[in-house]
Image (cartoon, rainbow, N blue to C red; front, side, top):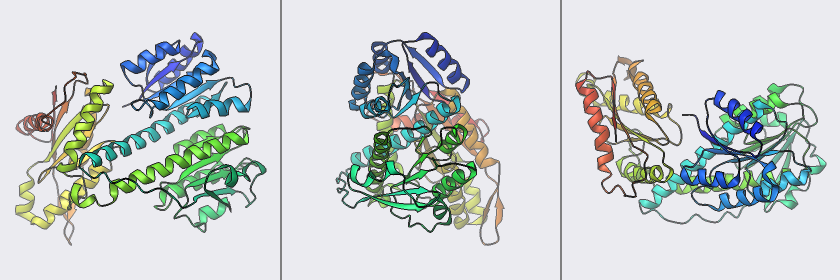
Length: 463
């Protein structure tokens, strides 16, 4: 489902133009003229991203950003500050106040859209890790993360191995950072040691004769397990607007395609490094010592023990944000016949392949768990009836649309799946759901309706 964007700008024309562009990209939009209106809108319902015009007043905008990032409930909301920044220092000041990005007017529409997509993906990833960490704590695994002591590894890559003058002091101005120079081609060839690189800084400001060179590097870094979670920042020529937008979509965490102050580069690097280290720490706490307790050994998915406290947090987030969420109960139709006909080993293989298909077609922020023999549970935050039905129907087609192949002789097995969907009302009743089983039971009731209705169907049950 497309995100909801809050546009805050004192100039009516700016608000209208941005609204039209974002509605055309299928975002939902709310408009505010003042910061007071924006605060009221945020208190009523958290947006997914904020576009903040600095014409409202620099000091007020900075205070607004600082306050929002200090708010535990709202600090994950990305903020893009837009305006006519009088000096490079003004851009840095906005970033230091809490803006996640700054766009100087006039800005390219493709860049804006790409930055929004990139920031929303980053927000989803951080939200998922925070949710997993909260669930881990609820399960009683509250061991604190160890402090990071080894130097952060930063690779500065350029067409040759020369480090630009404004990047030479990064090892001095960034805390506990070790900088290594490299050629961009060395990254493509894989000759740069990559197992412990926290940030790749790709400097193409001297020229980008072929956009594909940049795209190839990004694809390589994101496809390798050793660098999949590394932060990537690209410095591009001022006329590389198309390449910049594509770079963000291909996995760059940040791009700069204009002349900026060295302090801005330093700040952006520091933010990326901090976010990467925090994500690594959270990922370790979730992974370390928990798999046996909270995962299903057959499919590798989360099990019921993990799913129930996760649903509790999801329900609490839904009440707080006023957003609906969907719970799906999914069950393979006539699965017993697979075991009876092909044997239990084949049945286990079908379950593993089912898990892989489902996992490959859900977002990182969505929950997927195996909670019974052939029954799976999916929880989708920030969903509505249209999105939930489309997602459930897509998963149905995913299972029934192509056969499974099992056993050493690759026997073909065809199965379908029925899905029951429970959709919360998203209203803050002020009550805590004490029996989480009722949430799953509501989806099970809808699943029963899909089964009795002929199977290979989706049935919805609203709160």
